Figure 1 (cartoon, rainbow, N blue to C red):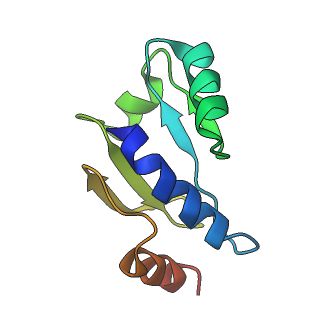
Figure 2 (tube, rainbow, N blue to C red; figure 1 turned 90 degrees about the horizontal axis):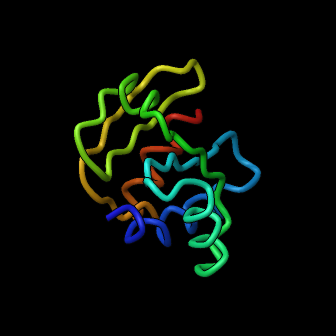
Length: 102
């Protein structure tokens, strides 16, 4: 499911270049670093990906399934939790994020 979102995540991240915005992905894949690197190379996507092999981040954020996403403001506060897929490159998402960056 997360791989389906990746193209729109990359588009959004590219569109936000130069703004106070950073998108990162967190992988809980059992294949670990090798699977992530292989996928990124195969897909050509450029996005920071952190590995959570022990599930620490998943526990900390209360992940119940995948995909789950969080929008965190510049103070480190979770302002939105998204359960399920999202078209990250949509006008609605861009508008919401632009509002947070003001």
